[in-house]
Image (tube, rainbow, N blue to C red):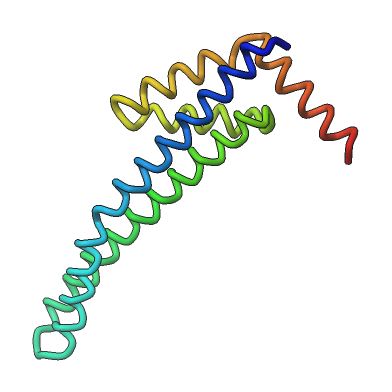
Length: 138
């Protein structure tokens, strides 16, 4: 257990928080499409254009799913960063780092660095110590 490992994990957690914010921000881009789809749906139902209402519902449904998926991934990356800082829930950190690899180029760089860092023996031991301390406290 070295302080440099803790410092590295703290720095990685800060970068995870930043990437979570960036992911959440980019997930808000389809909000325009969502609003347009809702407008098409309401306008298509109010007038006699059922095809426009149907297409608006599909448009808003797909964009809504994309928004929720993006926000969900942002929450996952945020939780992985929080767990990195606390040195708990190793599997969540591992999965969060793997998900980050999808977001090129910054996410890929951060994900690979995180994966390499948390798979070292000293960091695994740090996670194991924190987990055993939290079990003994409860």
